[in-house]
Length: 457
Image 1 (cartoon, one colour):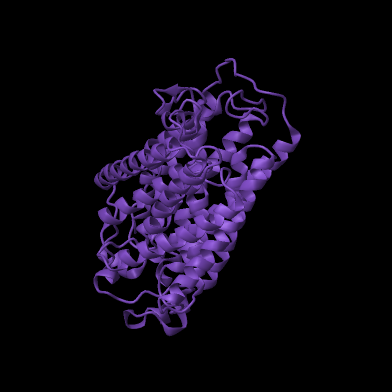
Image 2 (cartoon, helix red, strand yellow):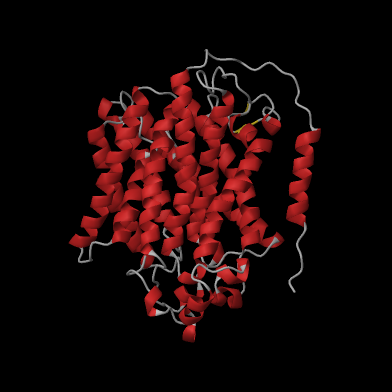
């Protein structure tokens, strides 16, 4: 019988008790304008849309992995809903949006346990909507970011160590980047860096953390043996893509924080960039002699969504077509380079999110209305190039350190026997297929033909 692990449950109980015992400290909150009911209605909708992206990501990733790892891969995304939601209430929101300490991090006591986060507006963070709504909207970004990373070390990471890494990454990588980029006194924002909805904070941070994770955890046994990989369920990938695309309207258009023309423009550029990237990826594959695949179309669509994220409210519809198309080709080539290397980024998180986020940030520096190169100004473009270096190095090196710390506490990688068995059974005691079907699929250690769907990632 496996030894019980009471520590996580006891920690949760302690946090629950602390939430009741710690009393809020009366303090003045800088109140903004009167609440705008139209803005509130839109932002409630946007927050719900962004939440949908995490289950969408679970389907997107879950369909791409092997049949023995579907449940574990999907759970790695979904569990972030629980872990990050509580972390955000206790200290995450304060670290990201609390009173600035040197433009790098927020004071952890500013909104500790959501102290002072309520129905009133906030003068600088949420002038026309309740601060509570702003905090919950930002929470959804914090949830999906560590979930994005999981695609890089899918099929070999220990669940308990992933939970620890997720907490460390959120507190020490995500929150500082969110503060530097989005807080009014943040270092990058003060220096003119434009990131409308998370090209650096979400996608570059996740992409570079994914690259570090793939390096630290090493290659899967199947990757070392050069075994062909067949996605477990391509329809899951299609479903996940649709959910992500739908939710991304809240992600980007909601970042206007108001029901206004900027939100409408971001809504339009989001859709157009994704459409251009979907077709760009598929047709580029076709031109290079590959069949136009469902996987290619889905990955391309997501790359377009990634690339338009930092630019969504700053560019025109016509420019968004260019951004989506260029991002699809560059990320496609990055995936090709990755497949020729020994790097085992299982679901190509770095080529899609890291590279896609960088393309989007560069494009923002070029096309941003009244501030980009096309407006005759170089300042924003140069700042964006510097920001790419800062964010990339901070996320990559910081994540490398956090992986090493995590591995010292709880080994990151499962044993070879657990990897052979599959993480669904070895980590969770569950399967996506059912016992009878799984037994047939395990025969001779090979995937049953019925489950060998698709042509690989």
